[in-house]
Amino acid sequence: MKRFLPMLLKPWPCTPPSRTLLATLAILSVAACGPTKQAEQPPPAPFDAQASAHFCGMAVGEHPGPKGQVWLDDQKQPLWFSSVHDTIAFTLLPEEPKNIRVIYVSDMTKAPSWDRATEGGWVDARTATYVVGSRTMGGMGITEEVPFSDKAAAETFARRNGGKLVAFDDIPKDDILGTPASAGTPERER
Image (cartoon, rainbow, N blue to C red; front, side, top):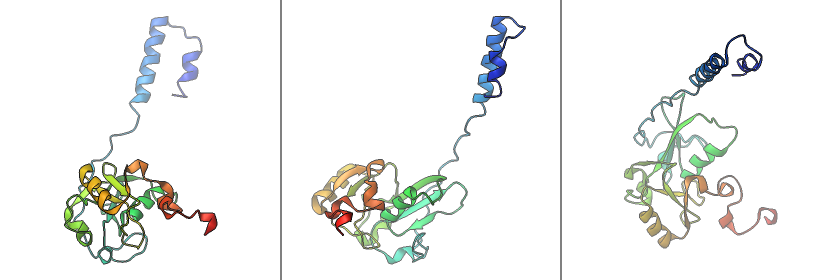
């Protein structure tokens, strides 16, 4: 567009309707060069208990609680995470890739138990309802963000285990990357 703008602003030897037509064609041709359609989202990969967790390198199956998998545009297999907390941290850390195609987390709505979280299937992380600040500990021994595909199931979980319901974009960033708000002690006092 920058290339065409000077040509459109200087006087042309053609009539005004022709100039309008040329300007419209120039804008449309630039618009046609816009972003391409995103690749289709791959389905969630079947759980692989022996897969190595992206951050710690340990087997994902060695940890209780919900897990995560992140699919990048340039990868044929997902990156695995031993907790939802780590999965979300990956999306926030500036040094990690940003070409994320889709994020899946364990669906605790359908999971038979905390220790069998992956047996309930997966939910798109961006559409899940999360319980944050509950008494449940994730795979690495920290308070876990617990994902549900069904809001009513999340409400029931929160009544039993404490915490509040939030959407993916509303998960407190400090709970993931800094001092959890639920910790009660400001970082400066630690």
